[in-house]
Image (cartoon, rainbow, N blue to C red):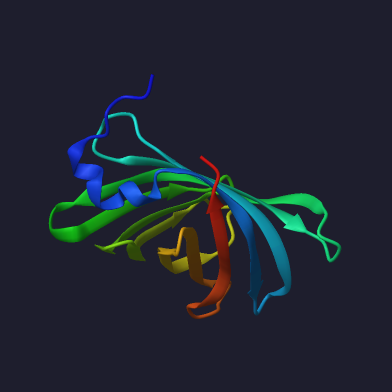
Length: 161
């Protein structure tokens, strides 16, 4: 049984559900690629959303390939349209984002990036999420490996539940 959503998550309620789709990625230090993605935003009655994203490579023929990134975390709406996001990656990187919710659009930038001794150097991120009609679009700019904040990933996802 799904608990009633906490009233504080109302500004982010448009994100609730399971989303699937495809996107493109690239960076100055790697070759461009296509990927598939599943994102879930769930709630448990507390004043936050539970977030999970899984991606995998898609080859030129559209076949699913090797797994790529995974991230999990929590989206915490704040008074006045603010939002805080805490993300963890199995690659040894943890990020804290702060941002604003405007209607069905969320813009986030990193406040803190922490990494383990063996993780790749990641220094900053900027993310946009928003509804495009009924789809969820998102884009991610990354500063890593000595590169400045640069476009890295973007996708358009359809709600599946």
